[in-house]
Image (cartoon, helix red, strand yellow):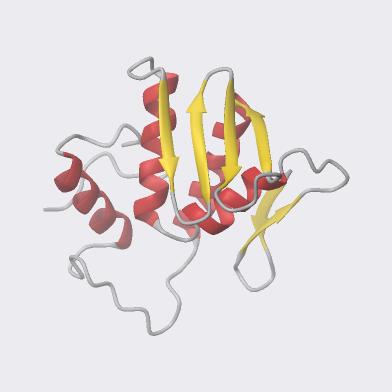
Length: 152
């Protein structure tokens, strides 16, 4: 599976001949989507498992349920039983981090209004909201272009 930007700046997932991980790509596209908040949630869950703070995290969204654990991440479509994928944890984390990097690098669409803390940058506002909600520092601070400090 390859993740990149297409000519319009949209995030694109290509599978080639190997279709084993299509449902994980669908999870990224449909559930994490272009949302910083959802991406921050997924990164935190993966980091908690990677760091041993949790044995297992469950990310349930509109279309998929992902059970994040070692050695594999299991993704199941919520409405189609035959649509599932088992992805090695390290590979799933690598793809999520690629997704996050591309998401962070994309400019805002023209006319987009930032509702929460418009006085802050997109990522600062998303981090401020995430950390205020969960009352903890996001574990990806200082990684993937996520700032170490957030403007208050």
